[in-house]
Length: 429
Ligand SMILES: [Zn+2]
Image 1 (cartoon, rainbow, N blue to C red):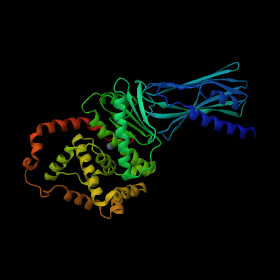
Image 2 (cartoon, helix red, strand yellow):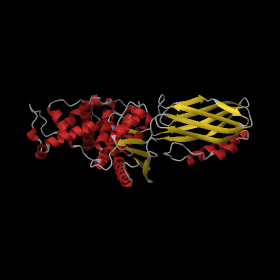
Image 3 (cartoon, rainbow, N blue to C red):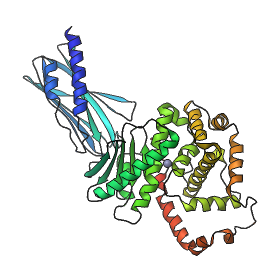
Image 4 (tube, helix red, strand yellow):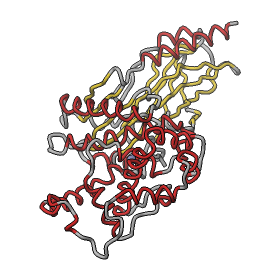
């Protein structure tokens, strides 16, 4: 009977502690639910239950409690929400009179965690032989606390924009929030995805700072990215620059698309979604159309060097030029599917992959044609000059393109340098 009461109390404590845990950007969490823990058991009362961390260095979990019983074991159990793996540590503890103290340092250099993940932890105290006391579960938001973050949220969509304080301000954050909110609405008019519980968008001021955060935390991906399983988007957008808004208009809807695709196909189905469809949707949804993509496709079509669609089922080539063409083609194919088959065609494709279709069979199932036929139809739909001329003909380009040709070249170079921003990074490895 006491056990039942205990379990009920423990659930209440857990629910309360989850409610009370602040969405802190601070490096430590507060002891808010401790008084309730103390009620749960006569033998053991918790004084301190904390976790603090230095980003990419270590997390220290600390427990202090009083116990009238003889404690035999203290375990720390923790897991990141983005991971399937629960870590259980038999933690060294000291008992002096009625007081027990335990602390555990998790080395993030050896066992990194995903930046911006949530760590859920609890302590298990064994005492008097076979009895066990659980210290209510807590959570720790593992943000990059090398920086102080400002934030602004939208209550309706649960989108929060975070920027580095001093590298952006409320106006900067609000601009990003407006773009994110409008993007979510527009994109989901087509996809009809169940909305994520929350979307957190972290804006680094430079690509270097973003890359450093990823490298520090031992991730082999770099650049801006979506972590659909966490509802987290990380991008680099320099504040106070002419390109700030245009970058927001490209990167934010791109990464939001990945979150929504993940929501539709579920975690189990996400691995079946071909790269051309996921990246194609993300690229086609960018709010600032990329003129270079069209020019590049035209050029490669004339040379007869477009990448066969079936080769874009898998992660894109690490070669930047090939990757760039892959994004361009994928976005264009998605545009074609929208035009020819409508939003229903897109939804049917995602439904097929959600159910585990292969890259080729998904197209057959959803659109009723083979992937090669889709590829051929898309190419035929492209340019008015579908017969490849022997030489690329600059004269066929619009006059304004010829006029600003060198600038397009520079722009293209800039975009290539920025390519890792939308790089092959949507899946954690
Ligand atoms: Zn992407």
